[in-house]
Amino acid sequence: MKLLFARVVLVLTILFCAAIASAQQIGRYVPVSAGSEADHAMTEINAASDPAQKLALIDKFAAGPGQGDMAMVADELYVNYYLAQKQYDKAIAAANTQIAKSPNTSNFYDLLGTALFDGKKDYAGAEAALRKAIALDKNNVDALEKLGKVQIQEGSVDQGLATYLQAAKDNPNAVSFYILAGELYETKQNWDQAKAMYQQALSVSPDHPLASNNLAYVLLQQGGNIDVAMGMAQTARRGMPNSPNAADTLGWAYYRKGIYQSAISQFQEALRLNERAGAPDDAVLHYHLGLAYQKANQPSLARQQLEKAVKLKPDNADARKALSELRS
Image 1 (cartoon, rainbow, N blue to C red):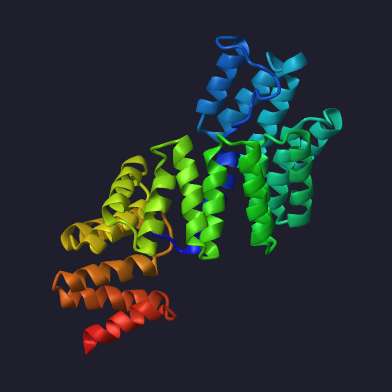
Image 2: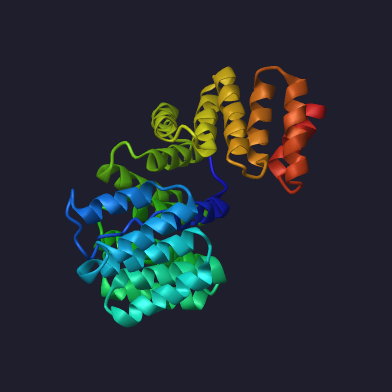
């Protein structure tokens, strides 16, 4: 299950963080031969977990195989390192230096946009940089995903949706755009369009866990076939074993099917996974667990969970109603 707009922002934030955590586009513009000295060096760099060690390896690469045609790769390694360490001023300066050297390289504008957005909250600057990245390469999936997030943060869900729909047309095999568009349709409660987007994603990648989870949610929301929704939720749970969202969706499918003990187990696991991830306590998870306890004839546990849900989110009308009915 999901919290609509908040869920969309969370997913997009994860996309940004994933981009910062790894230099996923290294070698996109400069081919790196498998088994070469540069390939071995980059493998060692990517495997290093200690920041000081990683920087020393990047320095070594830049002084050795990262020269000549490979200098662009070394430059990108530095920018990604600064982003990962949240040294945003250095990342911005390094990206601008490389743009001056290679003004037609899409990825450096992408990295600049990431630094401006994530480090400076400079939405206008980030949008300009990301648009430039896309103008240079309309298939730069990373820049397109980020542009949509920037537009959403600027307050225009419609622009973000338009960006993802166009990106899906230009990159029909990129599953992420269908999923992101579907989630934005959910914020508008346009369930039919959301379902169509997730179905399109699954036509490209049949067992995609996030698309499966989201489609299961829409089916449950619309009163669709519970067995079909449950199957998709189980696929999502297998594919995202550490996701509290996937556990919650499967729990809700069990709840709707009347299998309340299984629902309780999934909701409890969702709360454990949420805590393990260091996320804020989730009122919706407590609400769902309270409902399941109520159906399982465990009123004291149901009351405990519903009271927790109301405490965490006082304006949760559904939880308040359920608690009131339980008390009466």
